Amino acid sequence: MRSANPLRRSSPHRGSGLIRLTALLAATSVVLSAAACSKQGAGAASPATSGAAAAAAASIQGDITFNDANLAKLDQSIKDALAGKDLSQLNEAMVVNVAVDYWNAGKIGFNKGTGDLSVKGTFQAPANGRLDQQLSMLSALHSQNLTGLEVSAIDATAVKAPIDSYTSAGVPVLAIDSPLPPEDGAALYLGTPNYQAGQKAGEAMKAALGGKGQVVVLVGSLTASNAVERIQGFEDALKDSDVKVLQKISDGMDQSKALSNAENAFQTNPGVNGIYGVYSYDGPAAGQAVQSAGKSGKIKVVCDDSDPQTLGFIKQGVIQASILQQPYQQGYTGAYLLAALKVLGRDATMALVKPYLESDGTTLSSGVGVVTQANLADYQSMLAKLGISG
Image (cartoon, rainbow, N blue to C red; front, top):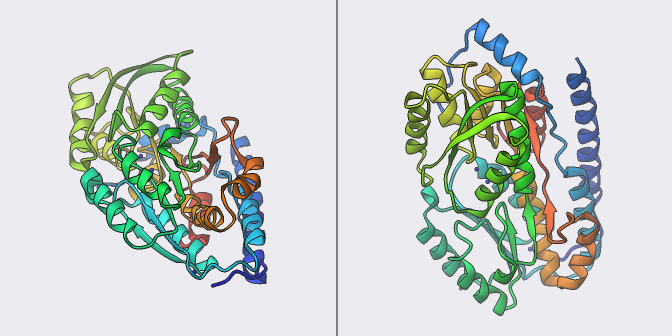
C-alpha cells in the first residue's frame, strides 16, 4: 500500500516450526508490553529532531503480534486434514498487484508454503502495477492447468471475467491483500482488515500530532477497494479530533509521482503538518520529501507497510509509525488454503477456517501491526527469523 508430494502426517520439522513461531510471538508480545510501559534517500537525523520524533512515536502504541498464532493453528489443521491425500497434481499461483519490495515477503511465504506442501507454485507480479499485464498473467496461467489461484486484484471489476473462467473450470480463487466482491466468486479474503488498518493509522496520526493538524493522504489508487477502506478508516478515526484531511492525492502507482506529490503537498500549503502514505512506496516518498525539506519531526508521517526505506526512516525518526500487513502469511497460509479448497472441497475447508474468520464471515485476517522506533528492532528480528530482509 499490499506456490506438489502426497501429504503425510505433519512432520516433526514442520510441527516444531509452528511451535517455534508461536513461542516467538509470545516472547515478542512480552517485549512490546514492556516497551509500551516505559527506498533510498534516508540520511541521518539531527539529535534534536530525533529526540522530538521519538517522543511523538512513544505516544503511539506499537504491536507486531499480527494474527500469526491463529494462522499457524489453521495451517496445522489443514495439514492434518490433507494427510494421506494425493497432492502430486496440485499447481498453485500467486499473482499480486505490483512488483515492489512489499511483496517479496509474500513471495517468500508462498514459496515456503508450497515447499512445505510439496506442491508446484508460481509467483507473478506486474511491473508498475499495470492492469493489462495482470490480466495477461491471469490469462496465461489459466492455460497452465492451475489448481488454485490467490490474487491481489488491481481492479475488482476488470478481474471478474478472468476469475469467472477459473471458478467455472473448478479452480478455487482466493482474494488476498484487497477484497473482491462476493459476486466475483473468490472463496474468501485472506489479508488485512483494511478499514481497521486505516483506523490504526488515524489513531497513530492523532497521537503524533497531539490531536490537532492538517493532513494530506498519498495513495496509489483512489478506487482500489483496499485503499478506499483504509482511507475511510483513517478519516473516521480522526472525527473526534481537530486533525483534518485536506487532500487525497493519487499517484497512479507511479513511485516518482508519489515523491513529487509529497513535495507539493506541503510546499503549496504550509499548514500541512501530517502525511499519511497508503501504498508501500508512499511512506518512503513522504519521508524523503520531508527530510529533504529539513522538516523531519515537524511534519509527522504515518504510513503503511514495511518497505526497507520506511523502516530506515522510522529508525531515524523521520516517519513516526507504519501500519503493517503480514504479506508473508498471505503467501504461506494462502498456499495451504488453495490446497485444501481443491482437495477437501469448499465446505470442508470453510469448516476449518470458520473459527478464525472475522465477524463478516468472509475475512481471514492476516493481522494488523504498528511499528515505531520503540519496537522496530523486535520487528526486524521477526523478519529475519522468517528469512525476510528488512
